[in-house]
Amino acid sequence: MSDTGAGRVVVEQHGAVLRIGLNRPEKRNAADRALLHELAAAYTRLERDDTVGVGVVHAEGDHFTAGLDLADVGPSLATGTIDYRSEDEIDPWGLSGPERTKPVVVAVHGTCLTLGIELILAADVAVAADSSSFGQIEVSRGILPFGGATARLPAAVGWGNAMRWMLTGDRFDAAEALRIGLVQEVVPDGTELSAATAIAERIAAQAPLAVQAVLRSARAGRRAAEAPVLAGLQPALAALAASADAAEGARAFQDRRDPVWTGR
Image (cartoon, rainbow, N blue to C red; front, top):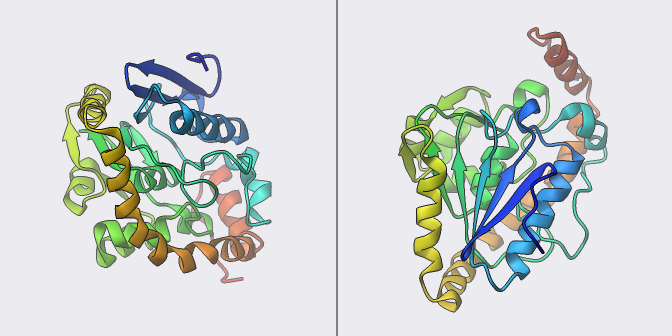
């Protein structure tokens, strides 16, 4: 598969490193169905292409991602599922399907909301630009995180840190992301991609079978702990998405006002 750059996701090979770039800058890289499908295809290329060993996920434009494009994907939430890959493709969020065996490093800049944080949690190493900001803001829309954060964020950053940010929907900066362990390095703005690529190149220089064995072993325990949480996400999402509060959250977002919750 040749490098691609015309769609929602830009894929470029640099030696043994495959750069995967979110490419919808006019919408702050909000993920519609097309972007989700193309991202799954890019991860699948990473997994199956023997000439690459490590992926680097980054974003074009001023922001990493504003999360889901609710205008495009919102109607699917009530079913509890979003169809964005075929059964044999790699899920970038690692919720189902074939397991990814090659490492992924994420380079974040600008705004990183909801599924962007969950993309970090599903990856292996993350680098953030100084001015990056983060938010797991689903509660302010009347729904819950459904890309793995409820299982993975407490494990990654500790219970209190995870609840502080998931239950309030507040934004936090790169320094806080580093403090709690969501990202592993904070670098000057504009250098995040080169820093992430340098880490990826160091990983790619190691013995491929050993790198994959480390990932496989490290993930074995995590999968067992995550399984019951992830299994309950789709029904929980469907119930919340059908609530009056979820509808109010969507309206309030569109109207640029504070929502009025009713608990129904």
